[in-house]
Image 1 (cartoon, helix red, strand yellow):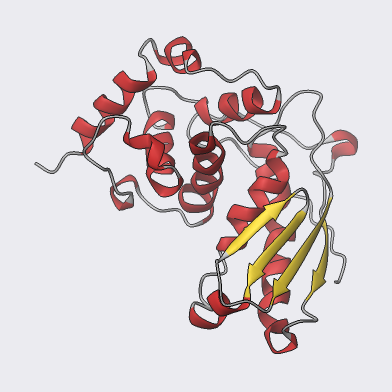
Image 2 (cartoon, helix red, strand yellow; image 1 turned 120 degrees about the horizontal axis):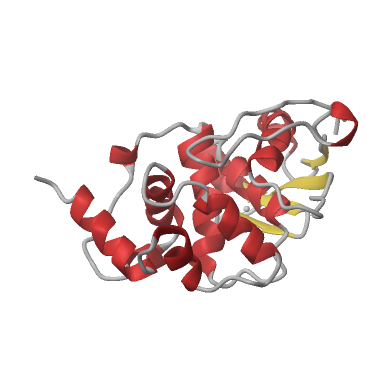
Length: 223
């Protein structure tokens, strides 16, 4: 990248994201997911599990990456497509997952977490893509999957963060853990407001984006 279930969760900030509280009315927002498995009815059980995972984690992610004055979508569609190409993708509030990937990797239920983040992000532009995908993979792998920093691959090249996804997620986890606590939500808010520039990293850490990447690369280089 349906049963209607409401789940309220209040989550404390992680890695410098800061304390967060319940939404208005004292209750975290809830997500309604429309599940469509009409093309692959035999995958209904997987789809239901994925839908329930989205509903459970939606309010947690909303609380972890809030933006003042911004209300994320509260409705989404999860469609399992009969396809032998790709993995999954998200457009607006519609998440599509290819059947061949589910059949080959039924354990990869976490892929819908990444796609769910895209629904919540609702960025007016996905550029730069490494930020969009990095934030989504950070919330999947560092928060939902709880992977340690050592798990993330670090390419030994300049501007390696541009590889996006897990590489960028590991970089963001390292930044959150020391050099720039709170950077993930600041990036998220800047992207929502079309206000992102690389200067954000200098402002938050005193180091440029490329300098921070080099610091990260050296810190993670095998001894």
